[in-house]
Image 1 (cartoon, rainbow, N blue to C red):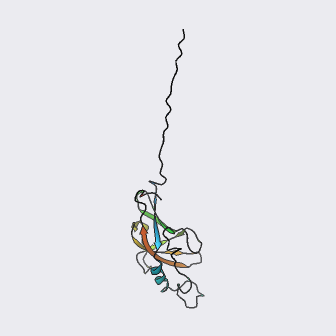
Image 2 (spheres, rainbow, N blue to C red; image 1 turned 180 degrees about the vertical axis):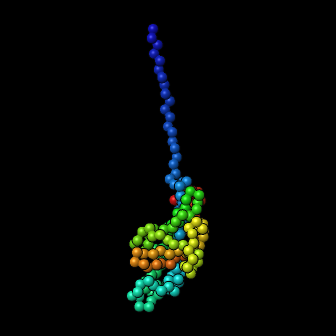
Image 3 (cartoon, helix red, strand yellow; image 1 turned 30 degrees about the vertical axis):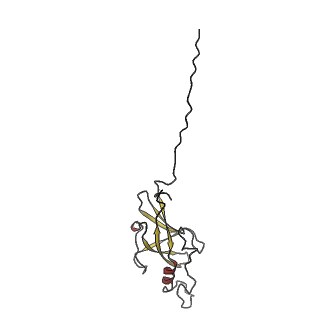
Length: 153
């Protein structure tokens, strides 16, 4: 007599939860302090040789709340350790995307500062430069990331 053996398997569902960029990098957002930046532009001689003696501000180089003054138009990128490695203006009011930001120690914009010296909540000074040589002078507060997901970009 043959006995039939039945093998029963229990079905299992295995779920892995994945949070993108959790341990890869973070983005800190920076809104340009437009009033302070415009005050600097009023004291800068423009790079445009046809400006007829106007300062940057009079030459149309102005900062606006809906542009560089919007948090998220500039981002500070960090590595997995939380150290800043770069900064970009991702939506400039001139239409150029991903402009590299050069950091400075203060509002004289004379001494450069390393990205790694930037921390969340730092007040920073930076410039962006267009391909035509025009330099924009910015400044503002670095905003931290979501406290629930401190390393998510």
